[in-house]
Image (cartoon, rainbow, N blue to C red; front, top):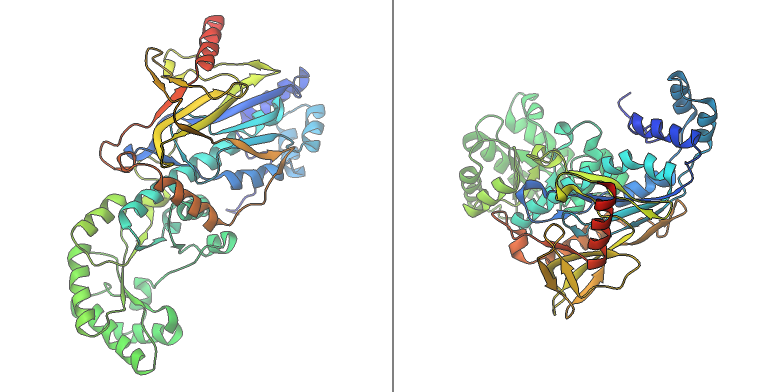
Length: 468
């Protein structure tokens, strides 16, 4: 079967192997904290849209090892006592996070997990799997939405997605601003509007294009969109679509539109619009598809293409051209002691301890261009320091600061029910609307600055000296 469920074995082997060591050394119940953050913005852009949180929380609430999981691990030689521990395992940790749909930036620990060393370590892989992918796709979708304005966007990516990742991609696309999906399973699971047209094979299966269009109109009169480029778009497809649309009008019905899936979409859409309008079919929409992304959508609209609906597939659901967000999950505290991961590059040295992230806002409540990271035990600082160059600092005492990270799960249970996807998407739109345009532009976007408090900077430097 191609389907699978997320259970305890949905992880990398080393998570379970390390867990066995912790168990044998009686370290499995030590209190620990891990941070999730990412280091590089995708698509050469200026922001990332955080997605996947509520999917992750749902997984954590039900995370356990099935009898089949245990049998598989037993066959791999894992200790019987440890397997008994795994049989009884349930996630009982706490999760703190920014809201799903939040605009986030590199270096900010936007989610942290508190719990036992075993459970916080075990969830690393599934957490990264969910958050990295959905945040990547939501960000891609938001870029398409930015250039599309109020035009309709539909996810057409199921057939080109990486297997079951299509489900998560459809969800993330809605968070990023899409209106609908062609993915029926995702529409059912996530309560997403579903949309679609017809295939070239449908037209080819009839003895004539006109007959195919008439058959479709008889069966689907309320959602009738004709695919007009199977043979000859302007000399056959559109004229036949107009003929059937007029026949529908005589019956008191309305055809919804036509779809272009090949050719010069800017030039063709202009010609098609003219033909439809000349026939008095001004309400019929023009839908286009075929390897679309934010760059092509922007180009089409810059050329004045009269397109109403964009069906975006491959380059959306695969996160083209980046394919992955480099989110990481790092230990920041164990048994009450802060921890650090060193690197030859200071940029890859982690921030230790329990932290809070806050956003600096201007007088109008818009994002000022600074996020701050402080220790959770300290007050909001008046000065932020560059994390890699302590000689650079910014005074923020006069500005409003908005804390971003709040508890969303306690003892393995969500504190609030999962909101509707439309609500998460609306929050994302609201937050992106507060981000100044210079950070949203595609070419050479401004760098959103992330600073740290003096106390956190000193703690990091102390631990660097200790562990050198």
